[in-house]
Image 1 (cartoon, rainbow, N blue to C red):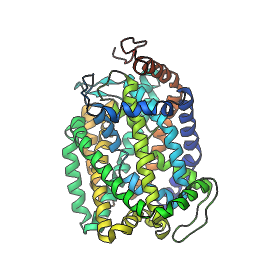
Image 2: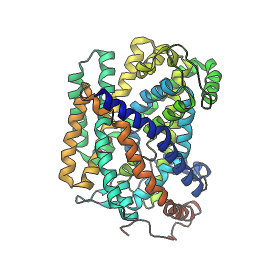
Image 3: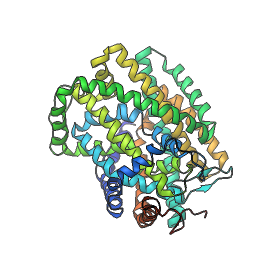
Image 4: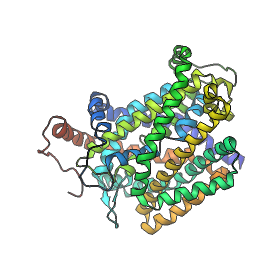
Length: 463
């Protein structure tokens, strides 16, 4: 078993360090240049038409509101990856990993935008009249690559299993440490809570996320920023470490073992993707149900989600462990405890651990809930609604197994399967970049320049 795990780890490291890094950067750059730096040039417009429209009534075609689609998608990214994943990246790649997370996010905004545009254009209604979409639909309908579409659905459906296990284990171990709760009981409770949510479908998931996710994100940011402000004197040195060691190796210090440039690049890109999922293809699955009258209009929320998730939340988490010195006080094997140590810097051991445990508990519940929805949609595409219901049960069982730390060898396949998911999504995206450009030009002509009543092209495949 150790030989197999080592082999899988070596393959995953190779894919993420070289092939995935290249593909993600190239895809992001292709979309950034083809769309003429859309995510930067129109960033003010994006803010105005996303967060600035939260309270505006929407009567367009769709199942859930644009904001609910955004919070549902954000629920899969804002959580354990931001709180635990960023310290892990720093512990293995050094402070420079944070720089590469920023780069992935900046160009990933264009990637995320592009995949949501495609997901919206090629969405369709299922047998229950619910809007569904995702890479499998645009790969099949736009390119005719049926086999690639099937493989994408299979790998994403399977990748959800270890992803759920890791998420579940992260929260049960935190709650055990903070409140001494047995992992077996916590696992059952979390599985039941999430079961109640997911059995209500995307509408119930959306109603939970649009209330819980914004509250938890704001609460976490406020408490973390207070600590950073109290350690503001360390900030100039920390920023110097981030920019310097993105391009130069860093030696060991305290519990930190040191890292080279390749490690900073590998862990920055990998955790950056885990954080905002740009290029993974999950965003279009969540956004496909949104009420909108133009694919690009909904895709603006994708740009905003990457900004919030990586540029804001991950940056705050990274600065938090760096300014408090937690990255040197905790070794890589226990990197997931860095945020606890950082919070304890100001709030004390007891309250610091309690805060982190509460944040993780709510974040993980919403994250697993939307992950199950993603997995169900792949099963539905491959089989039917009954197949989706079977996978729902499989995922709920995976919550408990992960909670008690079972089948850990399955976790080793998470990076590998995620790599296949990304490859099967971004390569078709490169071929479809011209179509995204046409839809974007149409959006700019109609909505940015005030020609809303003059459509130039067909917007949805059902028109």
